[in-house]
Length: 321
Ligand code: GLV
Ligand code: GLV
Image 1 (cartoon, protein in one colour):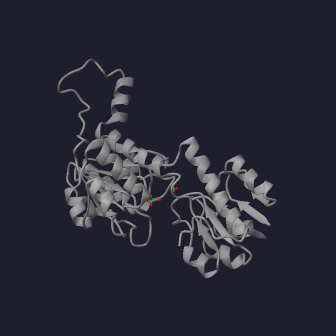
Image 2 (cartoon, protein in one colour):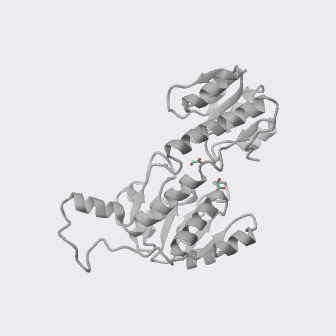
Image 3 (cartoon, rainbow, N blue to C red):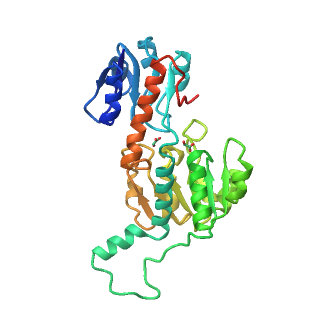
């Protein structure tokens, strides 16, 4: 049986496929594929391991009735037409859990970097502009401890951020989420479920952790940004299109909010040029939420484990639907 791997994964993981006797066709290039090209690439394949930058649409399924599983090396799967996959009887899997801590850690890092202006201070010092401690010296930051955090999407990552923020920084937690909260956990981390308008109005930090769907696209619109406090910071380590990036650049310039920490963008790898021009309390990272050696390795392993499970006739370990 053939397994197509669209972009490189860790060698130990692809070796596992080979030692299971599978015919592994692995691209040596980290170049996203989609559409007809991906459909052609999957010829004869029972499984395909995809990356979040690939686009898996209905063409792939109509052209490949032999396909049994698409294993995405990511927790998000907005790059895959899951309805078309289900219609074709193809399992879709993701890699949740293994990247929860790394992504939550990066979220806190962004909050702190924006609030305490870490890149600005570092750049200032390297320019030779640090001339000695002064009481009213810049760059002056925003408080984090004790401030309110609003979490949009209380899944695994949202909850991990809430725990860090509350238990580590004493931050009251407000959240919006699809599923009802876990009352015991909510009590432990001082979390209260609210509506989005209340969350936007009350939070000093608004952090996004929901999946990208037609309903959540541009959830953070110009109006949502206007509803935030002028002293608030927006953090996005989920998916870029959750935020209207143009509107965000305008809101930052107009002082409607105080700052932003972004790990994801609307049209990656492009970044809105107006955002690139903003340096004060704006920190931009190249989609590295899960980027630690061990986390990325485990993501490869989980994708492979899902493929092996489905091809062995067992249920997928991490089905997305
Ligand atoms: C990263 O963005 C992921 O979805 O795993
Ligand atoms: C990701 O796995 C999430 O549930 O937030």
